Picture (cartoon, rainbow, N blue to C red):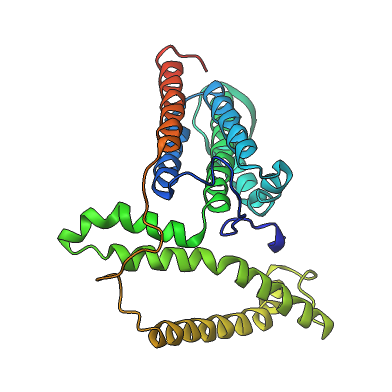
Length: 269
């Protein structure tokens, strides 16, 4: 299951999506999230899904790989669906048993929430898979730089976010190694009730936390040895510049956003 987590991984490439400025990709991802929540019907969701498939095709990332990245959130999506299914308000009752009831409005809301979660994760995957951690750091820092005038730690925040994304695959790999080592010593993580499984996870969590703190200390010492003093006075090896492809991407996304608004105005759900 852990090997299916793709957020934080980066696939090098020279595709149209890879060559976009990281600031463009970050802003368009934020606007894509807005589109997902603004959309009021399945036509809008279908349009967004087609747009994501188009972006995945342009980035030359396998669709199977993206779908595999959705497996870790299957439980969250299912739980959200069931919760909205039984707790959704509505008057058109389909099924009722005691205090539990399912309405047409509840079914609609449950499906909407599940689809939104899947689209949100897919959009985030496309951002991290096509943007290196360094580019993400530079893009976030440049986007947050106007807030430095009011004391906002733009560089430090961007650095923390990029380091967190960078070490997600590393922590996953270390977790798998520890799990295999504990299973070889007779540990059982799958049988028993929920409390027993939680207790069985302690031999896994303790070495993982110890290794994480040790890695963080090594990283801090390495940055200190290289005279890292924050973002003041630092220059960039590859300065960020907007190009024509960024304008093209912005134009295509503007057309998508306009189409979502039109669908909402005319009630095409």
